[in-house]
Image (tube, rainbow, N blue to C red; front, side, top):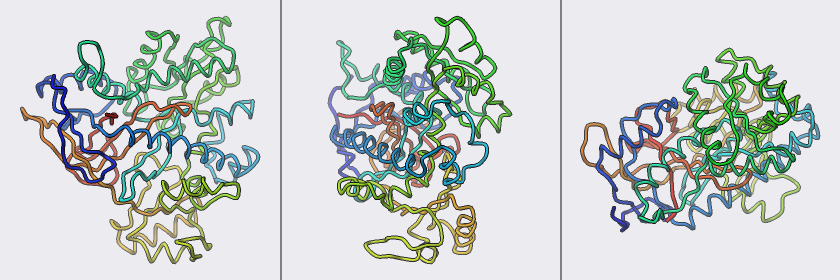
Length: 451
């Protein structure tokens, strides 16, 4: 294995100028990557990464330092919209389907809402810009990053097991999260991974991979389908699973025809599944809009942090709001400045319910804005033109890797505020825009590591 690092060009200094050389033949890398992600439901990708994506340690640290600070501000913003859960449900105009799976203890419910977070950001002209915050136990990127890192560690380690880069393993950090939760509650670290292989796009191995990892690293764990959940609590005390991961979303289970009654019974009988249902308020893009607009309790330092790292975002309604130090009428401004804005639904996922103004004709944009105002849960946000970085890829049918300029969307994983790996995804053809790894042939994913 070559231990030198080659220098290449970059679309922004934040990415640095380092590019790892390939450490094995193309067919070997293909086989290793596809073997690790086998049978997880991850789509077949005709283009794969040939190396990890390397960035400077300072850039890596900046992402997690800022992400943790913004998540804390986001949490406070969400909780202060109303003093009670009922008040927040009304303030956010949440669908009736989200009024379930609450813990009986409000303090515990609110305390553990932000255990599992993955913001999405791009590197814009001024550096990192956080576009949204995914706050849910069902985050994408965890298993995928673990599998990618397993391959890169094997290929980029010396004879003493030392790697040429720094990157935490998401499953190792999540294991520490479970240990911490168990210590908080004074219970045994026995972990329930709750999900279902009947949801489109996932398989039982997707959940069992994490359970196996935990069992091999000193934490007892088991994957539970919904109908199996009584076995997590209706048993002898020493056999119960008092903590766990809520690795599903209510909409996904509704689409699959799955009943959440068993989950509610597990919660009612002492099983803490994170993130708790309060995470939905943090997940809503309305919270980001409120934070961007500013809250009365924010310090000057909070305001500078938000202004620096969040693009201008506003909850869409008929009112005046601040823009570049002036007050503007929001709706006329949004209509007139279509090409610089993005319209997003409050609870949209995987790039759904997102309308990019510059890619939309004026009539369609105006109609969508009108519908969003009537609904009252959408936001508008400044469009951020992503900068690019150089990476090395492997295409099907080729014997050599090739370099490409791509515009990655970064997904820093944080578990109880701890850095847990930097997932990223991009279009392998170099195009920018929404990246849904499960939706487009050109989509590719990788991990970013610090060097």
